[in-house]
Length: 126
Image (cartoon, rainbow, N blue to C red; front, side, top):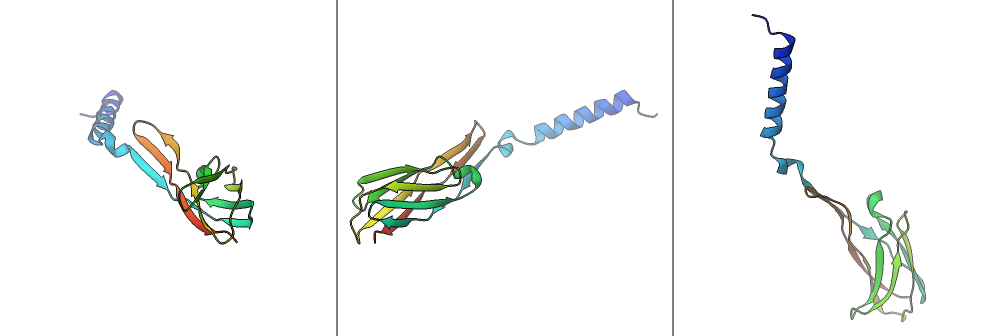
């Protein structure tokens, strides 16, 4: 006996349903983390700038905070869409500071989470 079109469609539907049931929903979910790095350039004792490097979705709207070694916040800046940032600061020559790039969530659903990781970059004022 030859299978008719209705039987073939029914068999395809059963196979497709079985394939969906066989793959657990947790296999479709995932977390993705993107590394972030930044450069720091001390222009003078009042301007520090830099460039964030990561995937393109992680470049813009990142907060860069400048801290003393004691942990005191002295300035904040926002990166542009290209990852460039500039902070107005008051630095003491020869002192170590840190530029801290904030972490950024770029996608989050019940089964999906994409995170741009943060970065801490120490630097010494000239």
